[in-house]
Length: 252
Image 1 (cartoon, rainbow, N blue to C red):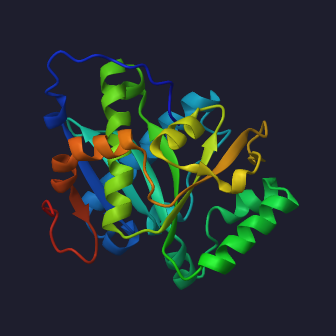
Image 2 (tube, rainbow, N blue to C red):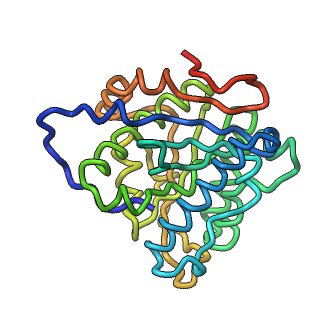
């Protein structure tokens, strides 16, 4: 969950060197690695913090599912502590593993007939393209309480969205922009649009909070592209942990 962002003017920003990006792909495929298990533990701790803060009780909303193990995690560390992360799930991977694409459930339970028809029609038309869903964006308590760290982390988030989607050649990315966390505004600033201009759906939380279905087709805002350029070196130095990569060195 994203706290409110307050702009900070930096006099001498050297903080970037303290950050590192880690991409953990399908943790189940590298589960024998202690490093993978440690990172998954970091992810669970981060979500317990972020969602516990947002809902005042970590048991009201549990943002953990099978995709912790077979999804892709885009993570930001500062001084070896995980401070922000989100999960990316591929529609094609869901088909291959016979899993329900995670956006399906919110549409089924909280969407109107109009939402369901537009969603169905989209996949009928674009099902052969590379589609993904970004979800469970979370910021640690430590980062949320430090304005400078928070501002830098959310700036890097813009860069992550650009570089990850272009690197993986993703055509369309869905997101749920929630009113209570303000993520709909963040996604719009990045260049995402409200899916078919449709109204919000009701989430299956205890208090039926609302969220807009957002869609990005890689048409990013000018500001987001500028941030992608600013943090390009940080992206190039990312560490990728995957069964398809035998090392954990940077991929530049």
